[in-house]
Length: 285
Image (cartoon, rainbow, N blue to C red; front, side):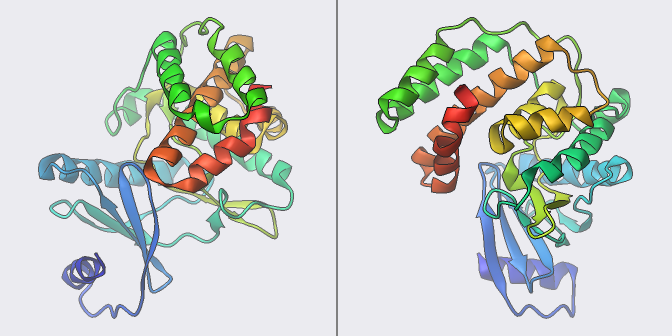
């Protein structure tokens, strides 16, 4: 893969000398590499070349639109290679929150609330030119969560099993009434932070952005940062968020946690499984 990245950079940035290539991480859709400590190259894992090219072309156009509305830094492409399914952008400052917890997580609430207010307030008719609609019925999500639980139950202590089974035995919440533009994957791995200052320095990986339920973005704040940061984020959030929205946010958070644990155990990406297991008690209590 290193040689492929070097060839890619030689094609688009002639004269750029590559000294180091380090693997940053890998999700379900992309693998990311850091070059010379100042450039990030994201490589799509989609097998179909046409779909791969469409995915990076769409993401580049989306990032251009997002950079106009986001109060937080977002990646801005330097080049896009549709054939390779790759795009490169200057590395944003900061470190991923999932592996670099901050000293005072409550200080993240105000910038996250302002960020989500702007993102969710973007004109839907404009943003759906860049992203699809992403809607799943609540009952379907509950069924999926039951499947994830069956996959991981052997790894849970009895107390955790009781918490999850209590959740799975309840009815799914009502469907959302309003859809907005959403990041749609706002997990802590996609938030960059200054650890010492407890400050958000960037929001990355917009691959899953969609016209979706805004409660889902808030749900991942709940899942990864906990109920207190979630509540403080809402204090700075200008979008609608009533009792029904809160119910869906908690529901999504629990479903997403089960999915993360199952993914981590299945794929060997232990950071996902370990974080989910560590946060299970507060997320399901």
